[in-house]
Length: 437
Image (cartoon, rainbow, N blue to C red; front, top):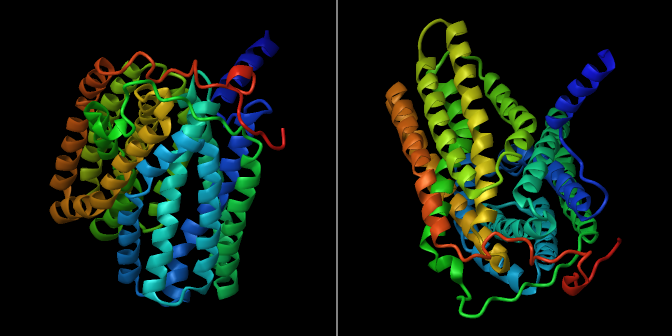
């Protein structure tokens, strides 16, 4: 009896841990993504300090350069996704990884603001294009449940970013130019390793476009565009965690600034623990729409709690802030899982890349304008600003089921279907090439 109970408990624990698929294309894609995200975690944790302290570019100019690069990235997602549908998603990913290898290496020789901005713009465009093609590839490799597979990828990516951040801390502690350059070059090498591992994923042939469908159908698909915009707005939850809460701690509370890092770590921990269990429950578009509603309302609750963290004794401020942060972080899991589910379910199988690109366009557009607006609202108004922000998230979440039903009513029968997506085991739809097994 004790052994049976222990086995059941062990099974429940395993459901909450990062899961590695069986050997094959899915495992190869997991490892490829993992290596990439370790490098990304290292670079993101050190890049701001490198460009300001080591290179000597003023912080405001770095921010301006990244804003310009972010606007440039808006141009990359939909065209790259469309190209992935026409020539195959793996090919587009390999090309973009090659570009990112070059741009990352060029950061080593950047010494001026204009050079930094140009290189960052090319890097951002390539990254946006890579993500669009990656979404299409996940749709093909993920089989019958691509959203769940993407949730598994996200869980392992969270672990990878944390590992990369810890490695970056060593470079930051050393603090020399050589230490920072090592991080940048390691990230460049990670793109190469990522591409080599990607060669173990089948090179799926493009799916034929059904007669009578538009070449750029995603751009004319108003219900899906509405979902992409709504998804981008609710995903501003990430800005709350990574930007608003740290700034709130620094400017409006007496909480030690180190708690900003604790909230950042909490966000990744919650993602690792909840992403797969929540992802398993997202089997239909209807469930995805309800998840958006749950997420929006939960973020509103978290914002209301955070509004109370700007006054009272230090210990009370800290407890309230951590409580509100935990709610917002947990809601982010439902936001992400719902976005994964709906982006695959509502997109036609032959145009997954194009539709994934439109989803990314919604995310990037919101990320381009959201931080400035949210910062002005919350830091300008204080507690009431948090309440207003929460009301906005609640309104967006409540629209989730309505927008989802609208999109479902206008879908062709083949939308979201993976039956015709092809797999290595299906000779009639076999990939064109497969390297390394």
